[in-house]
Image (cartoon, rainbow, N blue to C red; front, side, top):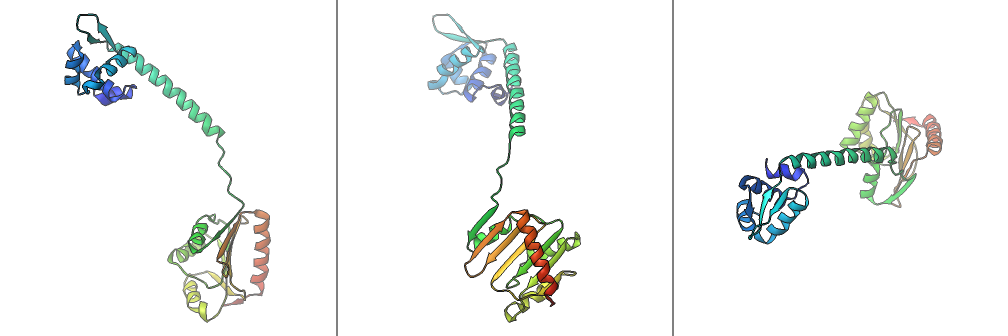
Length: 237
């Protein structure tokens, strides 16, 4: 057996090396065992007495103290103890898994700054039914365009209200390149946001550089109705 295998039975590195050398030598003194095993001489006595306490070595009562290995069958007992401990650990882990309750997400999160804005975006749930978005500057990112295409392919109702002006005109044309994306223009000022699946509402307040994420179904349903009312009045781009 390799020293690493002894370690699997609960022996530390020095105990594993000393026991392996002891089995090969049959019986030996501490100095010889230190040389043959590679255990530092300053640690050999502690290591050998630890093996004795674990039943893996015996002391031969001679004028010069010598040590001999216990029969290898003792390793089977250590293995059985190890297996019993592992079985108990599995049961304990199983109990913990059953009792575990993930910490609930905060229903409202408010952050400031552009960096935190993008962090909060990644916390938005992936929609399965609808994605209603209102965009102040119609900002474009490649991953947002790809996300819109993916949602449309999945049959998700994807509607964007955009503020149509000279500032946003170029970005709107990029959004219009997404086939079957529904876009209308609507007059709103310095706010952007998103409503997803009656689950979450996302607001970006431009002037205060503040972003709000609200996870509340009744509120999301209300915002959906307001969006749909605005959509009916909005004009095609």
